[in-house]
Image (cartoon, helix red, strand yellow):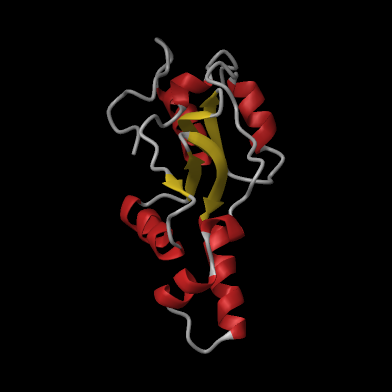
Length: 154
């Protein structure tokens, strides 16, 4: 793959974002409705955390082990977004190279990278976006890659 590709070329620009006042049930609904697996969390338009589908699975599993009654209302009463979001999120800037992005994702700690500028969320790059770049390069040997091509984004 070309290492000259930049984050701003491959990131999903229409990012679904939650905030710390959202309830766990709302996060589940966002992820289900939009078919996403990572949800950046913002406060005053700044990235403060991220929640993955795995974080929600762990929360439900924890509740299942402690209670016979796992419901949206129980989750909403007991937990806030800040209780289970990943804080100190690793992110990249819009001019990060594909090589830098691959180095970070290859560590295996997570599967999505928010793209930020001065803490403001500009986009997100997931493993899915990397596969799209690979597929594009394999099938189009000319021109410049852009996530603006048909079929990309949310």
